[in-house]
Image (cartoon, rainbow, N blue to C red; front, side, top):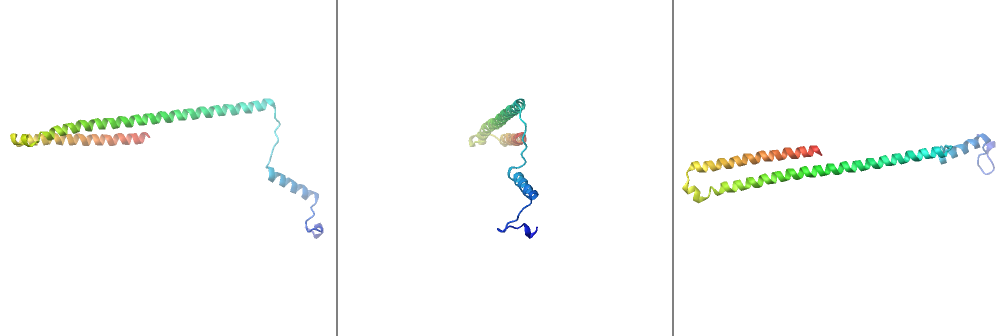
Length: 150
């Protein structure tokens, strides 16, 4: 720029092209590129109908998702309760059987029976131990399947 373009206040004097360019840049920068659309009543109604349709589909999708989540949680909780009830019932039965077998090893029965009787009772207790181990393994498998179901 030439020094002749400077005014007495120390500011630049811009040509008409430079002023127009500066105004255009400020307008574009300040407001962004705003395109005026020609609106018609029919177009506005179509746009509003589209918005309503999207809104209704969105609400329907949310309800469906909530329904699925509730069903999933209910199924998950039900399966968990079933597993818990099954193992609890088995352990209660097994505990009763073990108590009966251990009562058979009381002192008065030991004195009146031979070693074959004692060994037979221990074999039955060993069978209960094996059943419990199998049931615990089944519990692990059920819980792993439930975890995979999640």
